[in-house]
Amino acid sequence: MALIVRIDVDRAYGRRPFLRHVLSRLSSDIYFPRVESFGYLRELKVILQLLNAVRAPSYIFFRRCTLPSDSILGMIHMGGHKIGLHLENSRSFESFAKEKAILERHIGKPVVAVSKHGSGKAKYGFHHYAPYDPDNYIRWAQQSGMKLFLGNLEDPSIRPSENETGFRVFPSAFWLEPAWRDTRRFTIDWLRSEALLFDIILLIHPENVLADESLYEDFKCLLHLLDTRVLE
Image (cartoon, rainbow, N blue to C red):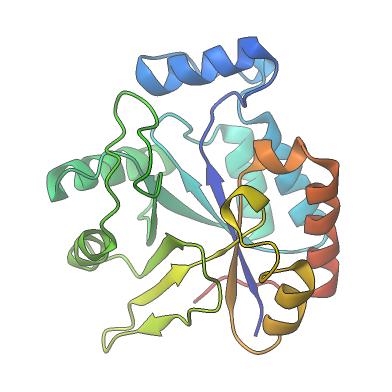
């Protein structure tokens, strides 16, 4: 058994300093070009450099405003990572299919995994549909030929499931950032021991992990202590 690393790429330009936060909001709500010299996906690149150095594959979920640059795509290919859709406008199957098509057209191949941007508690941007309804996403994903749904529940002891067609559902994750985790129950030591027994999703947001030195050290430690894998 192993860690399954999930990276949600929420912000095109991070959140610090303030100018990069503004560029992230412009990219999300209106439009701003993908300019790497301005820091486009800078934090994701740092995380990918680490993962590739220790040969730890991951799932990377992109919004339509955080589509991977050519350099990021090269790092993803080099590290054997998998690209997924970080669904933003989940109002209908049609809006889901539109976002999936945007991502697939950009990367030039089918996307087999989906996650949801936000867990129903807040609206994150002009195009974001806040309600969280995983039954819809699972149904739409299967209908469109996808193979995997990674959910946003915050109890990592919930086991994954797989149906007769091979579609896999991981309802929950170990959120590395403590704002979304019961840090008394689900400690780093808990994760180290439980990931030896069954696959657990380790969820990170690059800009948050890199902004906190202790979180980044925890992440590096977990990568060295536990096997990581992507599902076939």
